[in-house]
Amino acid sequence: MSAAPDNSVHDAATLTVGATPMSAYDYGLPEAAIAQEPAEPRSAARLLIGPALSEVPPPPDVTVADLPGLLGPGDLLVVNDTRVLAARLDLVKGTGGRAEVLLVEPLGPADAHGTTEWSALVRPGRRLPPGTLLFETGAIGGHPVMEVGESVDSDPTRPGTRRVRLLDSSVVARSGSMPLPPYIHRALADPGRYQTVYAGERDLVDRSAAAPTAGLHLTPDVLAGCEAAGARLARVDLAIGLDTFRPVTADTAEAHIIHSERYSVPAATVAACAGARRVVAVGTTTVRALESAARTGVLAGRTDLYIHGDFEFRVVDVLVTNFHLPRSSLLLLVEAFCGPVWRDLYATALATGYRFLSFGDAMVVARAGAKGTPVWDVPVGGPR
Image (tube, one colour):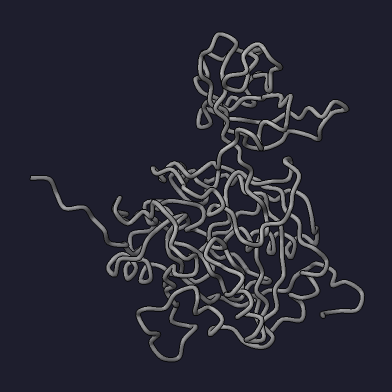
């Protein structure tokens, strides 16, 4: 007889001095707890409320539709309005052999002919040597849409990462599909459900390889309700990469090397944060963008900010976030933000049937530590 799965969320009582073993962030995540499709409607996703946000125990049937009731005048709701790229392409070689390409990130601007270079995951990599031309299915003999190049790097943890030339960018609109996370095993009937309702228009090179999943729950009605409660809405842009799904492979949290991502925080958002009673971030990517800008004063660029441990938050007061993978950098960020209470919340969520990961339910938690001072310059005119 096999042992019963361990679905508990363990405490960190065995941590070694000076280092945080990643085993402290293991918890039993049953396959059945991983949501395979989004809630319908979006705002029907359940919302677990952290203890510091409610003076009385909240009712057990709270959903994201109830988020406006947690907000009030002076609150600022900040979202990541990145747009997800339909980055998965099923193409063919000139011989008719199949090739799957997942565009990860542009490696530079388009040239004079509109060609862009990307890092990409290609399969089957060994059968696609540099120089291989790829075509749309049914269009062999026509114009190639992509050329496979050399490996981008030699990192053994990133097999198949190659440089590719996108010769015809219109193929993405015709043949691209949403790059769902590897733990989603069902096709998505409506690709729009892996896109937030407030996603901004973006050129291909400015889009994300993954969705800001906490924002998938929000609807126009929920956003209107938040504004009716007195909260304001602000935006950031952080282009999410596939590394967000990679578990931390280092033995300790301190040894992990975080991936970098492109971000932009508008000056209007900086001003709104400066004048807010509370800054409520929707998703960990929104936190990363805001705290990157607040820590450096640079409002746009690339960030490799690694949020873990005793990180000093300078902007965000409240976080709305999904339930994350064990041993993930996102889970480290959540603990840095709200402290060890996440363990109790995850245990409650598992025990009461909450759905986990990208299409799962959400929780809302308050910052546990003191708030630092941003180094960014508030635009002339001050907070608005």
